[in-house]
Each structure stands twice: as C-alpha cells, then as structure tokens.
Image 1 (cartoon, rainbow, N blue to C red):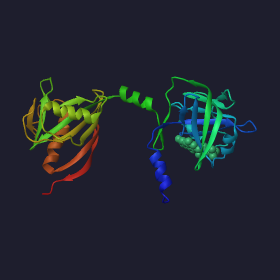
Image 2 (cartoon, rainbow, N blue to C red):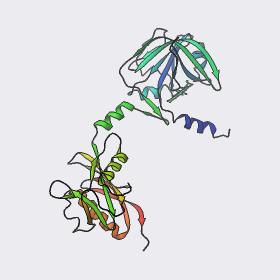
Image 3 (cartoon, protein in one colour):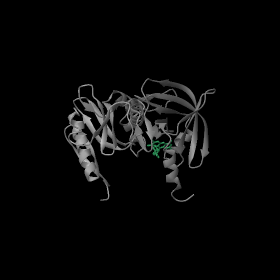
Image 4 (cartoon, rainbow, N blue to C red):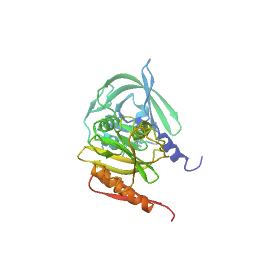
Length: 307
Ligand SMILES: Cc1cc2nc3c(=O)[nH]c(=O)nc-3n(C[C@H](O)[C@H](O)[C@H](O)COP(=O)(O)O)c2cc1C
C-alpha cells in the first residue's frame, strides 16, 4: 500500500451510492451523542439485525461501543445540513435539530425518512473501524424520500428525477452535413427545418440515434453545435453536427449551406445557426453557441482546416 492508497480507496468507496444516516445514542452521563454515517446496511431479518461502522478514533467510539443501544436515523432529502452538522466538530450537534427519545433512549431526529431503534447486539472491531451490530427493537418509516451520497456529495434522487421529468423539455436537432450541404425536412408550415426530435426518458443520445435511423442516412451522431433555450417554445434546444456519407434520405433533402439554400428555414434561430455553420464551414473554424433563441455567445472549439 502506498501513501495514496487510503485516499484512492476512499474515492473508490465513494463510487458506491449510499443513503445517509445519523447514528445516535447517550453517553454514561445521559448526554445525547450522534455522528453522520453512510456505512449502514441491513444484516438479518430473523433476528432483525443491522450494522453501521464507527471509526475507532472517533471521540464517540467508547460511548457507542459501551452503550446498551443506539438509533439509526435515515435522513430525508431536505436534511443535508443535519448530515453536515453531525459530521463536523460542532460543540452541541443537537442544538439545531429537533428530536425526541426513542424506545432505547437514543435520540430520534424529527423529519427523518425512517429510524431504527436498536439494542446493542455485538461490536466487532475491524481495522480502524468497529462494526456496531444492533438488534432492531422498533422502527418507523415515512414516505419521505431519503438523502443520497455519491462521490463526496449529497444528492436528492427523487427531487432530481422529478425536476428532470417536469422540467423544460429538451429538443434535439441533427445537422446532417455532407459536401457543403445540409439535410432539411418539411416543417409542416410551408418551410424547412432541421430534423428534430423531443428527448425522452432514455436521454439525448438515444433520441439522436433514433432520429438518424428514422432518416435512413449513414450519419455519425456528432458533437453539440448549439445549445439554447428556445423561450417561445418553452424548451431547451441542442443541435448536433452529424457528418454523413452521401445517400438519399427517407424524407427531406440536402440543400446548399448558403443564404439561398437556407432561405426557406422558417425558424429564425435555426436559420441564424445554419448561416453561422455556412460561414464557419467556409472558414474551417467552428464554435459552439450557448444562449437563447435571440442572444448568446459562440465558444470557439478551435477546429481549423489547414489551408
Ligand atoms: C456522508 C458521510 C458519511 C460518513 N460515514 C461515516 C461512517 O460510516 N462511520 C464513521 O465512523 N464516520 C463516518 N463519517 C464521518 C463522521 O461523521 C465524522 O468523522 C464524525 O462525526 C467525526 O466526529 P466525532 O469524532 O465527534 O464522531 C461520515 C461522514 C460523512 C459526511
């Protein structure tokens, strides 16, 4: 083991997504104690056992190792501050949380997703930690979603999923180019548009693959060329450059990347983007646009053809 191994190991352990708990007990004088732990897991259903590991260097180690019982509080999504408080050297970790005694007398924190009240069953020393095995005497679980921990940061799995599902939609378009031409399709309004598709739950890559397959062209799903909020339509638009081998598409046709060729593109934001592509193709110098349908900036990507 070299010197960096513990850090590398911690990083590797961090690839495992976990929930976050605060494990509580009382010391011999009856003072409430607690620490943040993500090493919690279930052990046995019959008898009902769980385990959590505690650093043997923790100032709370002796109290937990000798306590008649402890409580594992599974934190809910809104409780990152509680997790922080119980992981830091705070004089009184219980000063900023509301709590009450659980059946074994260890604090049950308000607002947690679930709690397990345990009688100490076994303490197993294991390296620089000890495994506290508790026999579950009582528990309660609410509908509140749990707080997650991944790669050193907290995350809120249910809130994140809901935001993605309810947030502004994402629409992608494929800028399928070959020999100075771009593939445009009928926009149903008497004009032309890039082939577009709404992104589903399976994500952008899958939507782009489907879009290209549906056009029947041999094009490579490429890099983003413009990423913008289409405020009037209420969605995010991502255009991908997709170099193609020549060949007839199932629908639409290729037009020249020129002012005349693009004249029938009805969406102004899309026309401006394609005019930029026309100019950049002439110069051999490409950028990525970030902004909204009217204003934004082009970040260079430094792709330059040798003259
Ligand atoms: C997300 C997270 C998970 C943690 N998991 C554990 C754990 O499973 N066991 C442990 O002993 N310490 C764990 N810690 C560290 C302790 O919370 C922290 O070192 C402890 O509270 C230090 O204070 P103490 O010595 O007063 O107990 C974790 C910290 C964080 C932020």
